[in-house]
Length: 85
Ligand SMILES: [Zn+2]
Image (cartoon, rainbow, N blue to C red; front, side, top):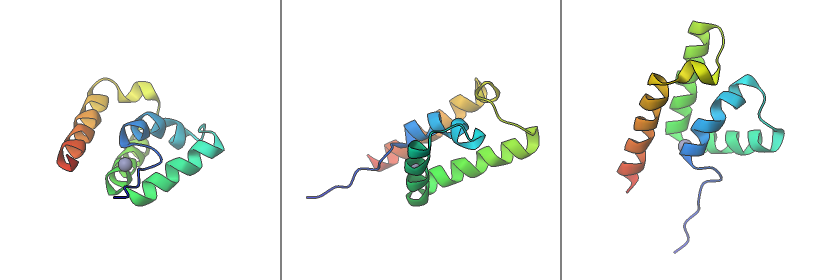
C-alpha cells in the first residue's frame, strides 16, 4: 500500500513559519513549505492565524510567540496528529 508522506511534517512547519513570514527562509525550503501549505488545511489555518497576529502587532518574531502561543499551537498540532492516529 502506497502512502505518500508530506515533504514536511506539521511540527516542522511550526518551526519554519516565522522564518517564512519574515522572508528569511531559504528558497528551497520555502518551496517545500508552500507545497505543504497547499495540501494541508491545518497549516493553512495556522498560517492565517500567524498573519493575523502580524497585522495586529505589526511584526512577528519568534520571541513574540513564546511561551503562551507556542504552547497553544503545539497543543493544536498534537490534537491534529492524535486525530490522524
Ligand atoms: Zn501541515
